[in-house]
Length: 311
Image (cartoon, rainbow, N blue to C red; front, side, top):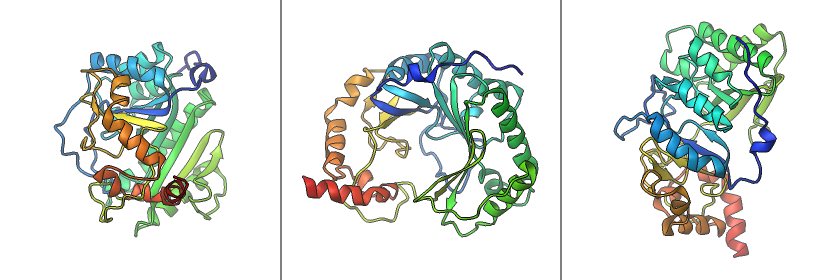
Protein backbone atom coordinates (compact mmCIF):
# COMPACT_ATOMS: atom_id res chain seq x y z
CA UNK A 1 0.00 0.00 0.00
CA UNK A 2 1.33 3.41 -0.97
CA UNK A 3 0.65 6.57 1.05
CA UNK A 4 -1.14 9.44 -0.61
CA UNK A 5 0.03 13.03 -0.75
CA UNK A 6 0.54 14.57 2.67
CA UNK A 7 -1.83 17.26 3.90
CA UNK A 8 0.05 20.21 5.39
CA UNK A 9 -1.29 20.38 8.95
CA UNK A 10 0.31 23.76 9.60
CA UNK A 11 -1.85 25.40 6.98
CA UNK A 12 -4.93 23.71 8.41
CA UNK A 13 -4.46 24.57 12.08
CA UNK A 14 -4.60 28.36 12.02
CA UNK A 15 -6.25 29.82 15.10
CA UNK A 16 -9.49 27.88 14.88
CA UNK A 17 -12.21 28.37 17.50
CA UNK A 18 -11.93 24.76 18.74
CA UNK A 19 -9.12 22.25 18.99
CA UNK A 20 -11.57 19.44 18.24
CA UNK A 21 -15.10 18.97 17.02
CA UNK A 22 -16.52 15.50 17.55
CA UNK A 23 -18.79 14.22 14.77
CA UNK A 24 -20.48 10.92 15.58
CA UNK A 25 -20.89 9.10 12.26
CA UNK A 26 -22.56 6.14 13.98
CA UNK A 27 -23.76 5.41 17.51
CA UNK A 28 -23.56 1.67 16.93
CA UNK A 29 -20.63 -0.43 18.17
CA UNK A 30 -19.75 -4.03 17.40
CA UNK A 31 -18.66 -4.48 21.05
CA UNK A 32 -20.10 -3.55 24.43
CA UNK A 33 -17.21 -2.63 26.69
CA UNK A 34 -17.74 -2.31 30.43
CA UNK A 35 -16.25 1.19 30.33
CA UNK A 36 -18.80 2.40 27.73
CA UNK A 37 -22.45 2.72 28.76
CA UNK A 38 -25.24 1.41 26.56
CA UNK A 39 -26.59 3.96 24.07
CA UNK A 40 -30.25 4.58 24.77
CA UNK A 41 -30.85 6.75 21.71
CA UNK A 42 -32.28 5.22 18.56
CA UNK A 43 -29.59 3.37 16.63
CA UNK A 44 -28.36 5.60 13.85
CA UNK A 45 -25.71 5.87 11.15
CA UNK A 46 -25.00 9.20 9.50
CA UNK A 47 -25.45 9.47 5.75
CA UNK A 48 -22.72 10.86 3.52
CA UNK A 49 -25.03 13.75 2.60
CA UNK A 50 -25.52 14.70 6.27
CA UNK A 51 -21.81 14.34 6.93
CA UNK A 52 -20.94 16.70 4.10
CA UNK A 53 -23.42 19.28 5.37
CA UNK A 54 -22.11 19.02 8.94
CA UNK A 55 -18.44 18.93 7.96
CA UNK A 56 -18.80 22.08 5.88
CA UNK A 57 -19.86 23.90 9.07
CA UNK A 58 -17.49 22.20 11.50
CA UNK A 59 -14.24 22.22 9.49
CA UNK A 60 -13.69 26.01 9.50
CA UNK A 61 -14.06 26.06 13.29
CA UNK A 62 -11.76 23.21 14.38
CA UNK A 63 -8.12 22.17 14.14
CA UNK A 64 -9.28 18.60 13.74
CA UNK A 65 -12.46 16.54 13.57
CA UNK A 66 -12.88 13.39 15.67
CA UNK A 67 -15.20 10.84 14.06
CA UNK A 68 -16.75 9.51 17.23
CA UNK A 69 -18.80 10.20 20.31
CA UNK A 70 -20.39 6.82 20.80
CA UNK A 71 -20.19 3.90 18.39
CA UNK A 72 -17.33 2.34 16.44
CA UNK A 73 -16.40 4.56 13.47
CA UNK A 74 -14.80 1.70 11.52
CA UNK A 75 -18.16 -0.08 11.77
CA UNK A 76 -19.83 2.47 9.51
CA UNK A 77 -20.34 0.71 6.15
CA UNK A 78 -19.10 3.81 4.31
CA UNK A 79 -16.18 4.70 6.58
CA UNK A 80 -13.64 4.95 3.70
CA UNK A 81 -15.94 7.40 1.91
CA UNK A 82 -16.13 9.62 5.01
CA UNK A 83 -12.34 9.74 5.13
CA UNK A 84 -12.18 10.50 1.41
CA UNK A 85 -14.55 13.45 1.85
CA UNK A 86 -12.37 14.84 4.64
CA UNK A 87 -9.25 14.33 2.53
CA UNK A 88 -10.80 16.21 -0.41
CA UNK A 89 -11.65 19.11 1.92
CA UNK A 90 -8.24 19.00 3.61
CA UNK A 91 -9.74 18.30 7.03
CA UNK A 92 -7.58 16.58 9.65
CA UNK A 93 -9.23 13.62 11.37
CA UNK A 94 -8.75 11.77 14.64
CA UNK A 95 -10.08 8.23 14.92
CA UNK A 96 -10.74 6.24 18.10
CA UNK A 97 -11.38 2.54 17.50
CA UNK A 98 -11.34 -0.82 19.24
CA UNK A 99 -9.36 -2.15 16.26
CA UNK A 100 -11.36 -5.34 15.82
CA UNK A 101 -12.68 -4.37 12.37
CA UNK A 102 -9.36 -3.75 10.63
CA UNK A 103 -9.54 -5.10 7.09
CA UNK A 104 -7.73 -4.05 3.92
CA UNK A 105 -10.28 -1.38 2.93
CA UNK A 106 -10.29 0.18 6.39
CA UNK A 107 -6.51 -0.02 6.66
CA UNK A 108 -6.19 1.81 3.36
CA UNK A 109 -8.61 4.50 4.58
CA UNK A 110 -6.61 4.92 7.78
CA UNK A 111 -3.51 5.61 5.70
CA UNK A 112 -5.16 8.70 4.22
CA UNK A 113 -3.23 11.94 4.79
CA UNK A 114 -6.44 13.26 6.32
CA UNK A 115 -5.89 11.03 9.37
CA UNK A 116 -3.76 12.89 11.91
CA UNK A 117 -4.16 10.51 14.85
CA UNK A 118 -5.48 7.02 15.56
CA UNK A 119 -6.32 5.87 19.08
CA UNK A 120 -6.67 2.12 19.66
CA UNK A 121 -8.55 1.11 22.83
CA UNK A 122 -6.37 -1.86 23.71
CA UNK A 123 -8.36 -3.09 26.70
CA UNK A 124 -11.51 -3.50 24.58
CA UNK A 125 -10.80 -7.01 23.24
CA UNK A 126 -10.18 -8.63 26.63
CA UNK A 127 -13.09 -6.71 28.12
CA UNK A 128 -15.44 -8.36 25.62
CA UNK A 129 -13.73 -11.71 25.17
CA UNK A 130 -12.24 -12.56 28.58
CA UNK A 131 -11.83 -16.23 27.69
CA UNK A 132 -9.92 -15.59 24.47
CA UNK A 133 -6.19 -14.96 24.22
CA UNK A 134 -5.77 -11.35 23.06
CA UNK A 135 -2.32 -11.71 21.49
CA UNK A 136 -3.65 -12.44 17.99
CA UNK A 137 -5.73 -9.25 18.07
CA UNK A 138 -2.89 -7.22 19.58
CA UNK A 139 -0.47 -8.45 16.92
CA UNK A 140 -2.90 -7.50 14.15
CA UNK A 141 -3.18 -3.95 15.51
CA UNK A 142 0.57 -3.69 16.12
CA UNK A 143 1.46 -4.85 12.62
CA UNK A 144 -0.85 -2.21 11.16
CA UNK A 145 0.65 0.45 13.44
CA UNK A 146 4.21 -0.45 12.39
CA UNK A 147 3.26 -0.41 8.71
CA UNK A 148 1.38 2.91 9.06
CA UNK A 149 4.28 4.46 10.96
CA UNK A 150 6.64 3.45 8.19
CA UNK A 151 4.47 4.80 5.37
CA UNK A 152 3.30 7.89 7.27
CA UNK A 153 5.88 8.84 9.93
CA UNK A 154 3.91 12.02 10.73
CA UNK A 155 0.88 9.96 11.87
CA UNK A 156 0.25 9.79 15.62
CA UNK A 157 -0.87 6.39 16.94
CA UNK A 158 -1.86 5.80 20.56
CA UNK A 159 -2.33 2.42 22.21
CA UNK A 160 -4.78 3.43 24.93
CA UNK A 161 -5.04 1.78 28.32
CA UNK A 162 -7.66 3.99 29.94
CA UNK A 163 -8.42 1.67 32.83
CA UNK A 164 -6.16 2.82 35.66
CA UNK A 165 -7.95 2.44 38.97
CA UNK A 166 -9.91 -0.55 37.72
CA UNK A 167 -9.55 -3.67 39.85
CA UNK A 168 -8.09 -5.85 37.09
CA UNK A 169 -4.76 -4.38 35.97
CA UNK A 170 -3.36 -7.67 34.70
CA UNK A 171 -4.36 -6.81 31.14
CA UNK A 172 -2.03 -3.79 31.23
CA UNK A 173 0.93 -5.85 32.35
CA UNK A 174 0.18 -8.51 29.72
CA UNK A 175 -0.02 -5.91 26.94
CA UNK A 176 3.15 -4.11 28.03
CA UNK A 177 5.01 -7.44 28.17
CA UNK A 178 3.68 -8.26 24.69
CA UNK A 179 4.97 -4.94 23.33
CA UNK A 180 8.38 -5.45 24.92
CA UNK A 181 8.67 -8.83 23.22
CA UNK A 182 7.42 -7.66 19.82
CA UNK A 183 9.31 -4.36 19.70
CA UNK A 184 12.44 -5.52 21.54
CA UNK A 185 12.44 -2.72 24.06
CA UNK A 186 11.97 -2.17 27.79
CA UNK A 187 9.00 -0.17 29.08
CA UNK A 188 9.02 1.41 32.53
CA UNK A 189 6.13 0.38 34.77
CA UNK A 190 6.10 3.77 36.51
CA UNK A 191 2.73 5.26 35.57
CA UNK A 192 1.33 8.54 36.88
CA UNK A 193 -1.14 10.04 34.39
CA UNK A 194 -1.31 13.24 36.44
CA UNK A 195 2.32 13.87 35.45
CA UNK A 196 2.70 12.02 32.16
CA UNK A 197 0.06 10.12 30.22
CA UNK A 198 2.18 8.89 27.31
CA UNK A 199 5.16 6.59 26.90
CA UNK A 200 6.91 6.75 23.54
CA UNK A 201 7.48 3.40 21.86
CA UNK A 202 8.91 4.35 18.46
CA UNK A 203 8.45 7.29 16.12
CA UNK A 204 5.02 8.70 16.89
CA UNK A 205 3.71 5.44 18.34
CA UNK A 206 2.81 5.78 22.02
CA UNK A 207 1.33 3.95 24.97
CA UNK A 208 -1.30 6.25 26.46
CA UNK A 209 -2.58 5.81 30.01
CA UNK A 210 -5.47 7.37 31.86
CA UNK A 211 -7.73 6.54 34.77
CA UNK A 212 -11.17 5.10 34.27
CA UNK A 213 -14.07 7.46 34.91
CA UNK A 214 -17.82 7.24 35.32
CA UNK A 215 -19.99 8.80 32.64
CA UNK A 216 -22.16 11.67 33.94
CA UNK A 217 -25.44 9.75 33.82
CA UNK A 218 -23.89 6.94 35.84
CA UNK A 219 -21.96 9.05 38.29
CA UNK A 220 -22.76 8.64 41.97
CA UNK A 221 -21.26 12.04 42.60
CA UNK A 222 -23.58 14.53 44.28
CA UNK A 223 -24.49 17.70 42.42
CA UNK A 224 -21.92 20.46 42.79
CA UNK A 225 -22.16 23.90 41.22
CA UNK A 226 -18.40 24.28 41.53
CA UNK A 227 -17.12 23.13 38.18
CA UNK A 228 -15.00 23.75 35.14
CA UNK A 229 -14.88 22.01 31.78
CA UNK A 230 -13.36 22.58 28.37
CA UNK A 231 -16.76 21.98 26.75
CA UNK A 232 -17.66 24.81 24.37
CA UNK A 233 -14.16 26.15 25.03
CA UNK A 234 -11.84 23.88 23.07
CA UNK A 235 -14.35 21.30 21.85
CA UNK A 236 -17.99 20.60 21.01
CA UNK A 237 -19.80 17.47 19.80
CA UNK A 238 -22.31 16.70 17.05
CA UNK A 239 -24.31 13.48 17.31
CA UNK A 240 -25.34 11.29 14.37
CA UNK A 241 -28.72 13.06 14.15
CA UNK A 242 -27.04 16.45 13.79
CA UNK A 243 -27.81 17.37 17.40
CA UNK A 244 -25.15 19.61 18.92
CA UNK A 245 -24.10 19.01 22.55
CA UNK A 246 -21.39 20.74 24.62
CA UNK A 247 -19.09 17.73 25.00
CA UNK A 248 -18.41 14.14 23.98
CA UNK A 249 -19.70 12.74 27.30
CA UNK A 250 -23.28 13.88 26.69
CA UNK A 251 -24.17 10.65 24.92
CA UNK A 252 -27.95 11.02 25.21
CA UNK A 253 -28.14 14.72 24.19
CA UNK A 254 -29.26 15.78 27.66
CA UNK A 255 -27.82 19.24 26.96
CA UNK A 256 -29.23 19.63 23.47
CA UNK A 257 -28.19 22.99 22.05
CA UNK A 258 -29.78 22.65 18.64
CA UNK A 259 -29.48 20.72 15.39
CA UNK A 260 -26.96 21.92 12.81
CA UNK A 261 -29.01 20.36 10.01
CA UNK A 262 -31.84 22.74 10.92
CA UNK A 263 -29.87 25.88 11.82
CA UNK A 264 -26.24 26.88 11.49
CA UNK A 265 -23.63 25.65 13.91
CA UNK A 266 -22.56 29.26 14.49
CA UNK A 267 -26.11 30.17 15.57
CA UNK A 268 -26.25 27.20 17.92
CA UNK A 269 -22.92 28.10 19.53
CA UNK A 270 -24.26 31.60 20.25
CA UNK A 271 -27.58 30.37 21.66
CA UNK A 272 -28.66 31.41 25.15
CA UNK A 273 -28.08 27.95 26.64
CA UNK A 274 -24.61 27.62 25.11
CA UNK A 275 -23.61 31.06 26.37
CA UNK A 276 -24.82 30.28 29.91
CA UNK A 277 -22.81 27.05 30.00
CA UNK A 278 -19.69 28.74 28.61
CA UNK A 279 -19.98 31.80 30.86
CA UNK A 280 -20.59 29.58 33.89
CA UNK A 281 -17.40 27.58 33.34
CA UNK A 282 -15.46 30.83 32.89
CA UNK A 283 -16.50 31.65 36.47
CA UNK A 284 -15.87 28.15 37.83
CA UNK A 285 -19.56 27.29 37.93
CA UNK A 286 -21.45 24.34 36.44
CA UNK A 287 -24.89 25.63 35.54
CA UNK A 288 -26.38 22.42 34.12
CA UNK A 289 -27.37 19.44 36.28
CA UNK A 290 -25.50 16.96 34.05
CA UNK A 291 -22.31 19.02 34.42
CA UNK A 292 -22.82 19.20 38.19
CA UNK A 293 -22.89 15.38 38.32
CA UNK A 294 -19.99 14.81 35.92
CA UNK A 295 -17.24 12.74 37.50
CA UNK A 296 -14.79 13.70 34.74
CA UNK A 297 -15.08 17.41 35.56
CA UNK A 298 -13.73 16.71 39.05
CA UNK A 299 -10.29 16.61 37.39
CA UNK A 300 -10.58 20.38 36.96
CA UNK A 301 -11.88 21.14 40.45
CA UNK A 302 -8.84 23.19 41.49
CA UNK A 303 -9.18 25.38 38.43
CA UNK A 304 -12.89 25.85 39.14
CA UNK A 305 -12.17 26.99 42.69
CA UNK A 306 -9.53 29.44 41.45
CA UNK A 307 -11.95 30.89 38.93
CA UNK A 308 -14.65 31.29 41.55
CA UNK A 309 -12.27 33.15 43.85
CA UNK A 310 -11.13 35.46 41.06
CA UNK A 311 -14.72 36.30 40.16
